[in-house]
Amino acid sequence: MWKVVRAAAMAVALSSIAGCGKLAETVGVHQSFASIGGGCRSIDAGKSPKEAVYGSCAGQLAFVVFTDIQADGTTASGGSTWTGEIVPVKGMSVKYVGTTVGLAINGTDYKFASGRVFLVSTKADKLSVTQLDVPVGNGDYSSEIDRLAKTREVQEFLGK
Image 1: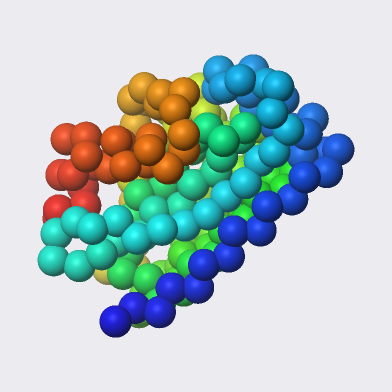
Image 2 (image 1 turned 90 degrees about the vertical axis):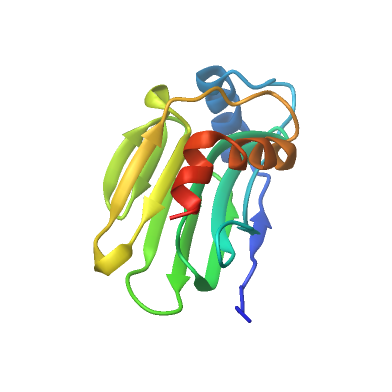
């Protein structure tokens, strides 16, 4: 059984309110809400559960990172930025930092304008990131993660 440390620290401060408004403009979510958050969850796929981390803004999905990592510990938080780390049972960890314009994964920047869905693999201690430019709906972030997890691209990735 995997021990997953779930930390979804939701912070609402003036800086995060302003950041959420700017992100709302960038990704098209409703601006009248004033909270950003983040979290992680297991996704059932293939022979074992995999990890997904996400950022939310105004209750809507800002981004999601699907991984093929069997994690021993995962942390995720939201505030004026999104930060987190996925720590596998063995092998390479994945760290991310998100802002209103994009996501840095292990130090490499990805702009949300090119997509807000990421597929991250660390097989053989080599980081591989695929950014998908697929539509992210305006529904509840949890429902959107479930919907995106069922898409062909994500299923093919997670099933490997």
